[in-house]
Length: 159
Image 1 (cartoon, rainbow, N blue to C red):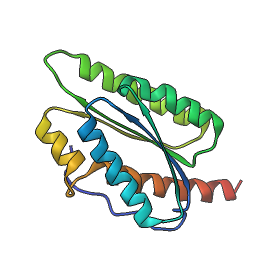
Image 2 (image 1 turned 135 degrees about the horizontal axis):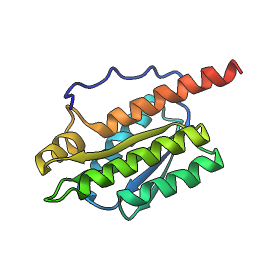
Image 3 (image 1 turned 120 degrees about the vertical axis):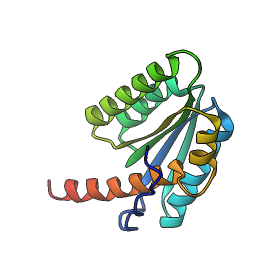
């Protein structure tokens, strides 16, 4: 896993409608991702719209994302969750299932879905990627959402 942060997106097109669907499981880490994502969205555009929906766990994220994508009322959806590896294969199976579902939803509905459902091996990794500043994946997800919103607006304008 990379420890480098991507270059922030251009503010152009940042006045979008963003929806965050976040798990309640592993709450402190998920909240850190939400906080960093919303701060970055507002940093790049105080006028953007952000709606937050909470679901019980990572497995429930795709069904909520699908309902939002079907309404076509979001320019981008950020799926936010934290899956911590235990002593079985459950975390890997869950992460793969969620990732596959989110990709299918994005392609099926033509709405960008940013996958910030992190599958991590330890609490130390969770703290570094969810709570700290250096490689915060919530901030990076927001940057990706803004950039893909701009790209999609350009593509749709050419249609």
